[in-house]
Image (cartoon, rainbow, N blue to C red; front, top):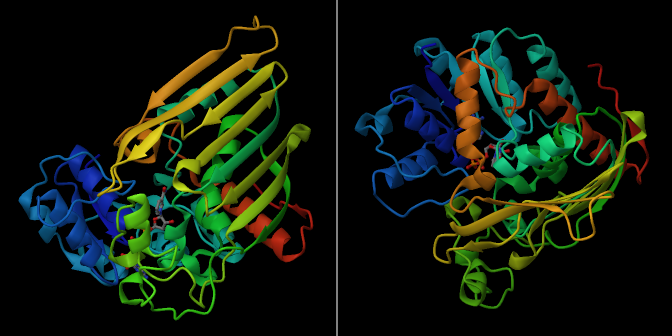
Amino acid sequence: MNIRVGCIGTGNAGTHHLLRMEKYLPGSCVAFSDVKRDTFDRLVASYYGEGGGDHGDFRSQAFPLRPEFRNIPFYTDPEEMLRKEDINTVIIASYDSHHAKAVETCVRHGMNIFLEKPIAITEPDVRMVWNLLRNYPKVTTVNFSLRGSPVSESARRHIQNGTIGRIVSVQFVNNVHYGDCYFRGWMRTQNRVGSLMLQKATHDLDLINYFIGLTPVAVSAFGSRQVYGGDMPNDLTCDDCDRKMTCPMSIYRRQMDASKALPGPGNRLCVFAKEIDIEDNQVVAIQYERGVTASFSQTFNAPHAGGQRGGYFIGTEGILDFRYYGEFDEFPSTGAYVKGTSTIHITRYNDRPGSSIHETHDWANIGHFGSGEALAEGWIKKLNGQPSSINADIRDGYVSAMMCLAADKSIRTGGQMIKLDLNL
Ligand SMILES: NC(=O)c1ccc[n+]([C@@H]2O[C@H](COP(=O)([O-])OP(=O)(O)OC[C@H]3O[C@@H](n4cnc5c(N)ncnc54)[C@H](O)[C@@H]3O)[C@@H](O)[C@H]2O)c1
């Protein structure tokens, strides 16, 4: 297939997805659409060796980028882009609140779709996206970016192949050690992201679903905002604040005390702003088919060395201890991970006391625990009609989003149990 790509939303994620397509399919990116183009220009310039580097999660290792790439046509209206340009594949990476509308536009133009998570942020929109794409004849994928990492694939295979017997329960946590970034930019309001269940936990719930291969039945949850938000002005940044050297959350204090890299221009807002209305910690209980149970909790104020993402998968014959963050180290001036390992540790009833299976997976300097390149390869395979089991489909995105919406609903109703009406 002659892949011709457009992108709606060229911030950090969208621009890096385009760059990765250019890396593997030079010349494939045709045009992009956004309400503004500054992030695209800044990130692309860094690939030509201009300006500062960028070491976000999506960054690909350097490659020779064709000189004309920076001049591909730019549109503020995606509809106009799809009408005028010869495009057959669209990456959707605009704000979460815009995904449903972007999907609807792409379906009308018969595009293959690479959709960033969450698929949408309200129940009507989530159902609309599901109904538009469930039998859509073109190729679609939802970017659950942890699935492609080698450690994820290995854990999934162990669980599916019965290394720990039949799955009984799961205990999963995400203690986010970069959680402040969600409160320093656009992701801090319900109208843009829905909640941090939809914005963040959608990954973790998808992983649990993916690893155990079961359908969730019901959810109940609690959550609250304990750390972020307050009465500071919504447009205040650490740069302009007269408490920049005294506030413990100041990006300058963090740099001086903890050697944290200063965040990019879109991520410097005050974390105590009035408009912040999303929770910063949640606890969720999930019931799956066959009586299998899972717990999930996330917090957004873990200290740097306290970052944890993973959990225990408990089977009839043993336990799989899964950790994305084993040993990891960031380079102070850039935030790039110069060292990073994930681990799997399996203990089984009938192993001798000193025996266990231990795996270490290295992901230093590759975003999302080594996943980004593998998922790009899988997406290109899918576009060429070949299977790729690691790339999520719309059903996966829909089920996970519905679980997040149910958790949010449960939180709003004091922890009431919400049965999932999935209509799969
Ligand atoms: N899969 C992952 O691991 C992962 C990680 C980070 C972000 N994301 C997702 O990627 C998306 C973008 O996040 P980001 O971190 O790149 O944020 P970002 O702020 O860097 O980029 C968002 C871009 O969307 C643009 N935009 C907003 N409204 C638009 C509209 N109506 N039409 C077109 N463009 C519009 C903004 O101008 C901005 O350039 C989000 O949906 C987020 O959930 C996914």
